[in-house]
Each structure stands twice: as C-alpha cells, then as structure tokens.
Image (cartoon, rainbow, N blue to C red):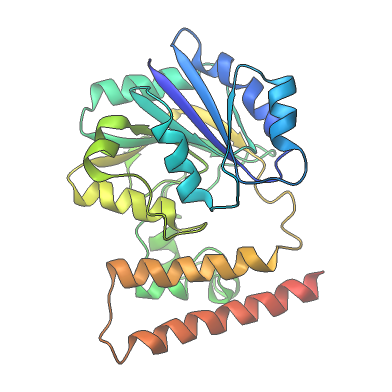
Length: 284
C-alpha cells in the first residue's frame, strides 16, 4: 500500500464529502486506503460518510479525544508506506500525491512533506514556519503585536514572511492540516503527542522528527485547498483555551523554565487566553 489517508472529524458534515471525493483523483495511479476517525460528532458526520463515501473506513472513537490521539488511532489502523494526515476541510488537487511521493523517494531522510496550501481565494497560507521560541508568544500570527506591527522582525522570522511559498525548501514545521508522513519515521519517533488536545501537535511532531535527524520539507508542486477561517468571526471558547494549553505544554516540553518561573509563564499564557476570549465575545 502506497498511501494511507487519515482524516479526523468532529462535526465535519459540511466539508467531509468534498474532502473524501478529492482523494482518488489526488492519488491517481497509487494504491490508497482512507480512514475517517470520528471524535463523537453530533451532526451525523460518521453516518454521512458511511452512506455517501463507503470506500472510506470509519472508526468511531467513542469520545472527543482530541486531534493528536485520533491521528494516532488512524495511523495504527492503516498500513501504507506513507500516511497523509488531512483535515476534513481540505480539498486535494488532482495528482497532488505524485510530487510528494517523488520528493519522498528522492529524499529518503525526509520524514514529513507538505504541499502548498491555499485558501478558497487562492492565496497561499503560511504553512512552513520556524519553530516558536519565547518571543513567538508575543509575535505569532494572531498576536496583537503582530496585528499592530506586522512588519516587525520577530514575526517575520517566525512566519518566514519573506518567503512567498513558491519554492521548495526545508522548514522547521508544516501545518498539520495536510502533511505526508513517512511511516518509517513514525515507527522510529512515535506518533503525535496525545497531551496536545488540539493545536501545537503538528509543531511538536515536526520538532521531534527533526531532533531525530529527519527533515521536514515544503513541496510547492503539490497543492491543497483549505477552508480555514470559514467561521473565524466567532471561535469556540474551548478552541481558544486548548490552543493556549497547547502552548504551555509545548514550551514546557521544549523550552523548560526554572521551577519558580514556570508557573508565572503559564499564568501569563492563560491571561492571554482570557483576553482572547473577551475579544472573541466582542466579535460575536
């Protein structure tokens, strides 16, 4: 089996069929299996997939275990040489797998390869960035300081803003919305860290791969379209909280602080979460 596709769903009825219908044209002549791991959707997602896309195997996880654990469940249930981890709101372009597969063959130490990801407007998303450091907390993509001072050097360095995503390059990490992962690298390094409920698990996984001597590469000849931001006007409070809890776990894992400073840093991150919750409610 060349390719195993793992799609994690949670109330994903709106986009899942379009996503799954894009898989066969994207895989072209390569052998493929697809698995949908449903995290206890309440909108009938798993029933819809079973009825309308029977070629995809559905695994009901029984509860909302989070993204990382569901990806691991799907990975263990498949056997392909490469695993495409895919969000249900992504649509793959026809033939997308071929350039990723060719890249993996030509670069045997590449653990994760990702395509150029565009929004519905055709504009490239900022997949492929530097690893976050302490300053990234203040200068990440959605931080207030980045919004007020978008050209600052710290945000540019983290987001790789001076790169237009029109060329291949090795990066620190790729968006987990669409990433092709070599199973041999998973066997060596392990699956996603299930302590991340959602967000930051892709950053962490890429970091673990690179720490083990693998590369993470952006392949521009492959392309996927992502519906991200379709409902960004108002975000679920749990999403905001889990994003910040993921930040705390990531920094504790990769940038540990002295015992006296750690709780202060965690409190500061959760203070930021409360500010984001307040801004989110004002947008409502």
